[in-house]
Length: 93
Image: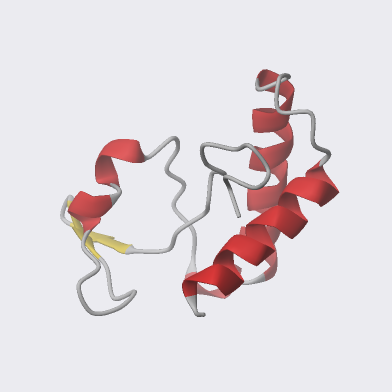
């Protein structure tokens, strides 16, 4: 999907626990912080109740800023969000 839309990547919000400076990730089998830690663009501490609506709003705000910086991309926030959703579906097909 990224190749289809001529994109190298789309920043994605990812939830993990951080305890005493260590990242603990329960995303799935074989998923480890080492796979993404070096690529973190930002880190924001949230409370458990913020994992739904707040996370989506934060990610959309982040993507809006990212799109302004990446003028060459040429997609709107709505278009990028749709592409992002397709990328997520691709992970499970």
